[in-house]
Image 1 (cartoon, helix red, strand yellow):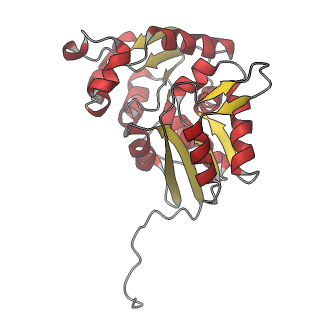
Image 2: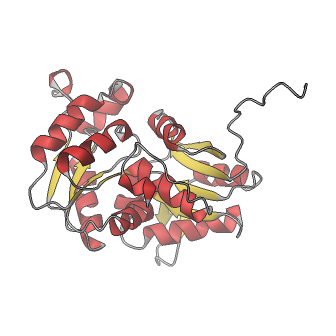
Image 3: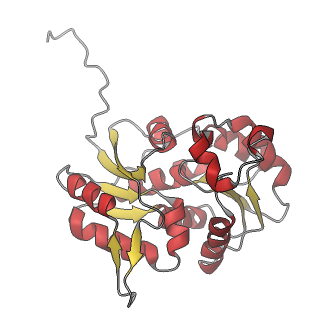
Length: 267
């Protein structure tokens, strides 16, 4: 290499290297994280195919046992000199319930090592709501969340002091309405998501008493509209992937403001 030849961007994680446990068949989390991540931060995914939650409570509830492929990914991440790792699965956090996030983070930390900050999407969204001074969020959920997961999500945030001012499961459109929610992703909805209808539905449905918006679900494409939503609603808007990136950056010691993806990333 000559002295005149400039180095090209290679996304090397010289400031932070973050491990991301994501649903095996999803494309959204990595795409959104790479869109938002500041320079010098690299993102590395381990894919999990287990049913939610990805760790099961032991009978005496003294701890959890990690699903086999979650454990496999953690063992691989342990050799990668990560600064942080996140179980990026909203459904696992809300179905796991109170105490599950901390128990799972502890089990993952035992595998990943003390030098890696470990967190979950549940913990990250709770921290993001607090940092944004949101107490009564408008909770927006993906169209593929079945009724039981929706109920678990409302219970989860209520149990942690954030009683939703309203709840919206996105309407996926006429083409998909004959399918039950749990079948939508298997029929390909995750790969044809459009953010414009989501933007319109949030604007129309957001209650006046909501002091912010939380868009849950790491496979739910939405970060492209966060800034516009905040401008239109005059309220903070938090999303699952945005919240987890924000918290992992802070846990890694990276405080560079990120522009264009909501006010949270500038805090």
